[in-house]
Length: 292
Image (cartoon, rainbow, N blue to C red; front, side, top):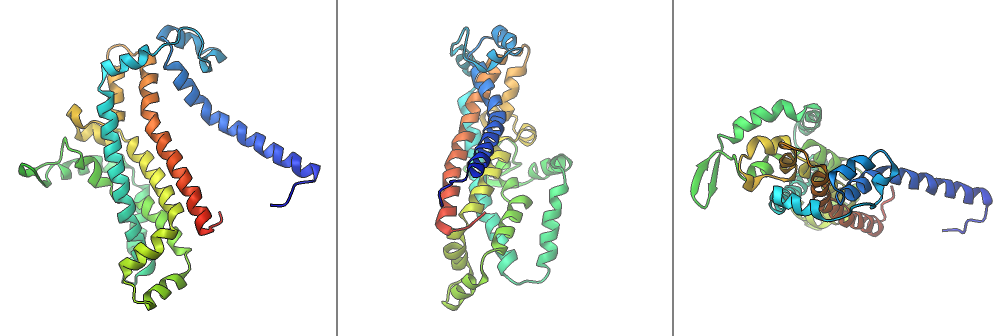
């Protein structure tokens, strides 16, 4: 990169970074408020909200809200359930949706554009409109487990995973990315005798890191933040995720310090996953030479 010598260029770059810092602060302040408030007792938390002290760790600071949160709800179990369900769903979704997009882009079969259009059109359908029909369907499906064949998927992990393994948005992201790839790569691999699955796994997947990272982040957030569907299909505490567990803190008297402590703890997996995928995303772009 050429050295910047012009004063006007330096000013433009300085203003650009200043604007980026201000935007970043807008998004960081709620997280700072949440974490700082998790260490304060309720009276001080509410009193500090009227001043800038709400963002500062001042006053009566302690870990009591965290201890109280564990006493009120099985936080560890809820976090484990969410991470398990979200991880399995993300892995399965990336595999199935990327293969579906590969078929839509590179394979030739009658009616594929119509099918793809129908899939994308489902993006405008609110989940609330299909939640009850989905509930009736999964409640009558069989499942083969350790105790043999059982009917109904309620109060299980797979009822929170299987219905969300494929979705229109993830397929659409992969389709758009695959369409921009050079067709010569596919033709060369086919001429060398590679099967379609070998083309997918050995040619497409290694250069599709950015779209895999993007789809993984979006899917992770959607699954980790699910509330309505787990609330409908899990009556047992054993299978409840973190968002359903949040209602434990709004029963009878609301302890806002405990709420902030609980929210701070369940936010950590999201931040860790994002930071991990961010590095993978940048590495993939650098290694493939994709500009954007």
